Image (cartoon, rainbow, N blue to C red):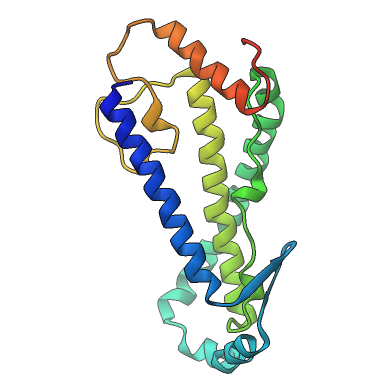
Length: 201
């Protein structure tokens, strides 16, 4: 990789780390603690949350009509999402050990914690859990796919793509055929190291 590009990528990583630190500091001011999978707020904060909570009956009166019309379509997506979850999880469970690729942890991507927010009513909590599952599942699947792409075809596209996965920036440039197979083996070895196995595949 070009030295200048490598320097820019290092700068991006440093800025992302700085951003995460700033976000954590801001969230720390909201005074909550994470204990296992449970999130607890200070008593004063929780009481303030309860005061702004909208009751279910009032909430139903404020829902836009188009939301009622589309709700069956939105929630019917749980069927393909659940099947997708099953198949992508089975895929990595079966294939990743064969390829010597570290498995992706669902818990790092599918985070369900909005149900601990006292300012949400039960319907809002259900919506949040559903959205968190769907978005987390797609991120989980993207990482599984990204690791697969790194193993089989770590080559960038000629055209710029939006929202490329985190591994894409390190892939080989489009049209760079020099020592292709040796470089692909290096990408595979990097995946093996992530799992703690340096053995060549």
